[in-house]
Image (cartoon, rainbow, N blue to C red; front, side, top):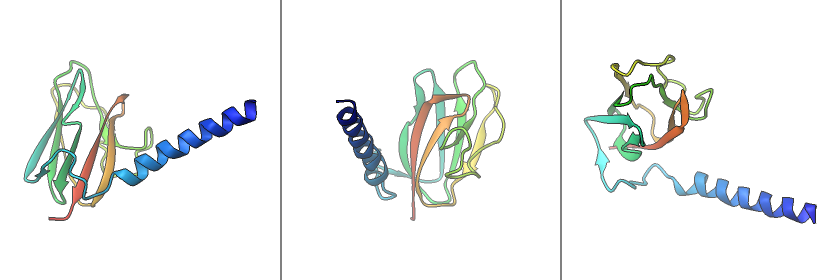
Length: 128
């Protein structure tokens, strides 16, 4: 009985992982619009706004917060930020600070608040 439960759980994990890796593609514009120029992302008490969006390669994204706590926007995977290591200010920011990053690589990149990793989002970076 225990073995079959493990098999079912493993199967569910594989299906979930497959969904994460294969349904998010660089051409996926889930926000309905490709953004360019300068984009603002704000960490609120509910999370990043916008939480998922598509930008053109070379777009500058500025991160700020409305919370009264420090924040640290960074690339997944928490805690090492290895998927896009340049996308990391390498320190926490005070609630009054902003941090800007120019996305030069195309792909789909998860982001999170390094201090509170349950705040997360997705950025799709596409060619113009």
